[in-house]
Image 1 (cartoon, rainbow, N blue to C red):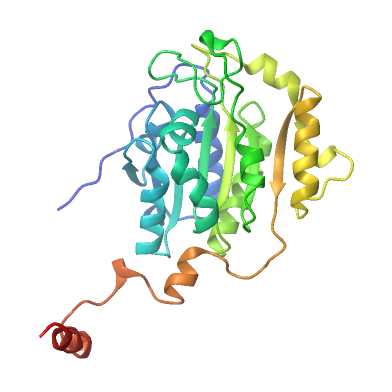
Image 2: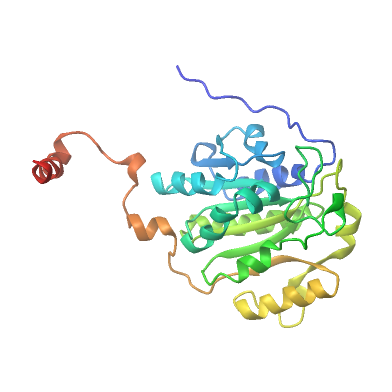
Length: 288
């Protein structure tokens, strides 16, 4: 009899913003009635990347910067699964940047949660791609994932949450899970998740976050308007949070639908000899 690994207590520092993501994910999955055996969580490298170890679900510890490639592979192998990728800003926006950019274009129906604490917490507080100028000697302007996501013309769901606002985080995660369940494509959520040990930004971010749905002209179906709103919000010294893009299209746009149609996927295919004899004979004839 094969036994699965049991969840272990989180190894995060008390107060870490990742606890908020873990709790919100549990509640959102429960609200959406996602069965544990149908949920696959692909974790990245870093503190946040261990999140799948703390849930009794199917989990994969991905290679550094490769969690999106592996998550998309899982979805294409078995489209019936609910697939979530979860990692940090260092994992996703540094070594994983190539996969991050292409995930929007590919548009597979998975949920990606990037926990951004503006530092490499696991390796003791170095500057990350999102660190502010002056943090640990950083002289580069921080990378902004939301503006980047909005610049890619694909029917993705794009949002940002804050671990200090669990109610909003749960509602956004529920919408993202619905989006992927309907096969509509890639749902990206950046969560502002403070590192209380090396970069405690709770107070600062709580003062600076601004729900963009309260801004005049808010229309998440208008990519150009949302890019302007986000940019102007940032220029005013605030941090935009909320749903940034909600595509108008109601049809299935996911990569898995385009590649597989209504097929069950390779992981659920019947590979026994009899029903596939014709295809095998054709293959052999072609190489004879």
